[in-house]
Image (cartoon, rainbow, N blue to C red; front, side):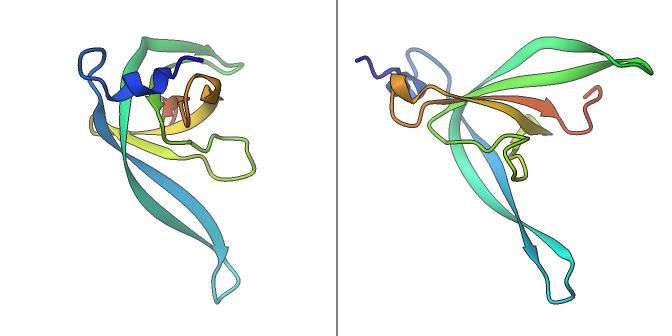
Length: 123
């Protein structure tokens, strides 16, 4: 078995950078209301800009969206998992993890996250 996750840190292969991942958890406050807490994680990752801008065709309009793909040994939480999705801060923008793909069969913790800019519109 080949462990390609080692390539995520190899400067001969990629240019890894440090990104900030905000992990949000929900608790019930003393007033009985939902309270969000954010945990800040500094993560080594490889970030690739998406294919520029992706056109989403909606019933009411067409919308351009800004996507990035992140490769890391950090295990992301995606939208739709019953938890709040992680927020990736990169290049001065905030992106929500929409889809995560587990590539741990290629190395421990090797994950891909497809992230949509917050607000879903043009960045």
